[in-house]
Length: 152
Image (cartoon, rainbow, N blue to C red):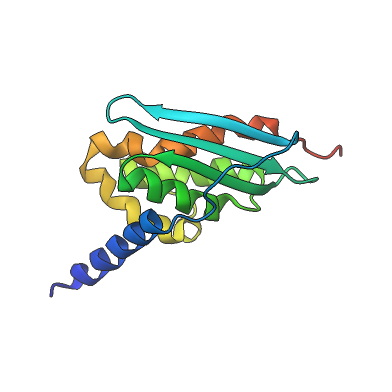
């Protein structure tokens, strides 16, 4: 087995695990929950994201529902784990780093923050899958302006 094969196998396992056993799947209910949808007409992937912000503007709860390919579902599941507890500023920074990682465009600013998101780096080789991988992220990004930041 070549040196990179172990890493590719690990990343494949992460994607399969999050596809088969998605984390934070389901709706959030309540008047203080915000909701956004994403749809990729090219392949039919759909995702809905719900967010509840905490008193300091951080993402207190984040959940998703959707249907689509393994990449879109694994990406949404991984996203919820990474954004849980993040401030809107930190969420935007992670979104930018994630996009740089999977598109090969731009500079990743915080390599360490990506963690298991590196499993989706192979999307770079398949540009048509970029929309799949970023679908949930773009829906979550739509919700960030709803965060009520504390007065200073």
